[in-house]
Length: 247
Image 1: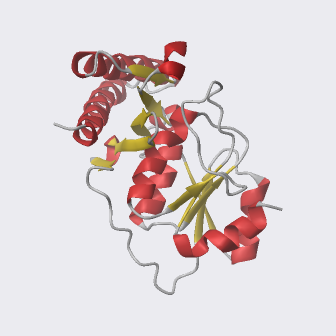
Image 2: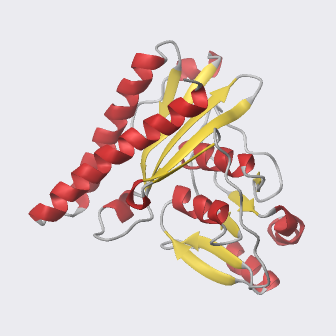
């Protein structure tokens, strides 16, 4: 099995584990913040064990582990978010949480990615690029954070006369663009590499535009893994959106 298949398999495995944890909590009536901590921990250990077994010489950058600075000299670094959307995971009935698994390679960047949406039973992967449906003649739809929508997103919505759709995790928002449910995702105000590495890899494989809000490329495995802003959109909307976000 290749790296693309491995990423999808790992994301699916962590997703299955998380569904089990959530199901147990729901049956026991204990769906609250502690479930999020357990999900973060269990999913992280699941992914680290799978990676250690199959790729023992690769380095891992995980939201839930100490930063292994050997990654800066490594040839291959897996960038993972074991549970993206911890808040949504702890809210009964919410589906907008995800598992991210990406692989960065020196000289190539992030070329491998998988995003599991366990509550939907779906795994999107660079190994099987999605086909984004046509938008048709409906209004533009812009997905934003449900808890901290940035002001720049509102400016884009006004410029494009777009409907604003609030949603949970970064992975769920990016996959909403990939699925064609929305047309663009505009984020500002704070993220890390693990929030966007896998989702943007999947989006690029599907032919979507991905960049910083100033149009600069997204760079990964940097000394400081902070990536505060992000744009994912249909290619035909790129120019109009950047005209707003580059101001």
